[in-house]
Length: 405
Length: 208
Image (cartoon, rainbow over all chains, first blue to last red; front, side, top):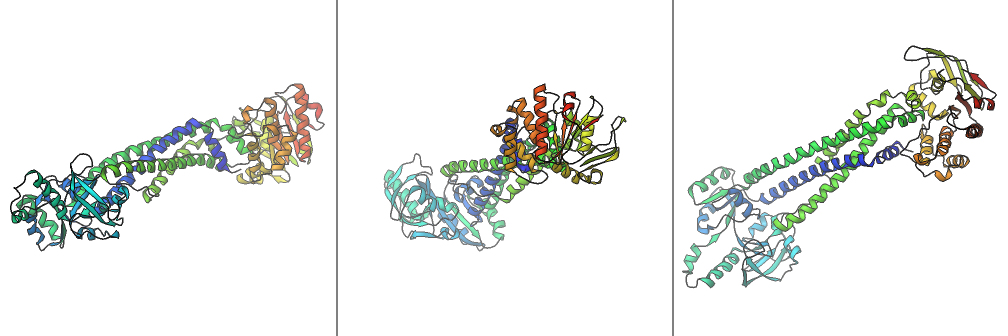
């Protein structure tokens, strides 16, 4: 019989002690792994999504909102800007690429984004089937949208006004047709239906025409009045990052926001929340260490005679110590594993919710480096607790203990 | 087999106790008898190598206990010595069968299933092998305690007051069992007791 089996039997012989220590461990480990995973994946997803762009230009308002709405497609836009106003920016020598985007409609909760095909190139989005859109009301679907809504090339759909699936009138006189489905990119593109800018304009021009006939003005005036939601910018030179935002914010009616900066700020805010939760989880971890210590201390006292008996059986003092440590380590390992699984279960559950509400899902992944560190920490605390609890083993007087029974 | 010479022990309070020399040939049975408090149990733990003697030597199966390191002594005790206690000591988290298996596992990781079966058969424990030790009756616990003292075929079986809690009938039964089982595994048997009822069952006696 192995000592580990005896340690296991000893552990399960006190189910209530076991339950308490396990629950504490489970709670702290699941909290920490959950928070680590969420912040890591969120950080990763946000970085990936903002990577193609250095600056967003949009209507005045909160810069964070502008980034969230135009780059990450979570929030509502700050407003619209005139296409002619951004023309000057587009020609600036520091600028490498600009992509105008316009949106305001959705299909079953998935945003329809009007933009140039260059947008897809910047995210390295490739077609899985079909072709890119060429004229108005042709649309390519991101992989998640296509999968969730079961869209195929050639399908028609009618958009509805607004960015959420609920409410908003349906623009049923302008059906969109799907010309292509994109491969999964792991970015926000997967969540979008993408068409050209004109589609967005025509859906809404037509809507206005319907209500206020005769006030459309001349074709030229219409061209002048063309609006986009924002302009996504990639700089050629890092100097642009320094000069352009300030220039735009001070001299135009528009605002410029830097996605990198805003996301960093957002992660900073979330980070302090995550740190608080981690702090709480760490305290629980210490309490679970204390609980292991107390329950082992108690059982070692109660089992003094059994330990003495094991010495009669030929076990060395070191082996008795190992038996106690094994019990603590076994408990910590089981607690860690169950906590890890509960943490992943939490990720899975939260992911289902955020995927539905925000279009951002979390991946249930294998263990990562931080979690191995946490395992080490958990085992270390259990080992310390067990060591402290088993000091009396060194002072065990076999003869006295067995005859005092 | 067992040979002690000028053996003496000093208690923590300074009191000294000297023991008469003991000599026991292989397979021989010896009764050490004396009133309470003369150091009978001390002698037992000295022989088991769990207390250090003040002076004198103990040799068991040709091995001088003084010459062994602590680790060797632990191994030696586990392998060659079996103890039957007055009060029964078991590992409560293990069932009867696992208690017996555990005793076989140290210091060498043996797992002699046949030995477990034949011994529990003879001691009437077969049907309780999967029971928890604490659910056994007094008599069953007594027999398990005997089984634990000899399951590993030790060269020397030490029995500490094995009969003091028993009525006359059970006293005889236990003595017979001990002698029988010691003979079967060819062990030397040393019984330490103050129970005068046991006297008549042994020719070989030492008074303390």
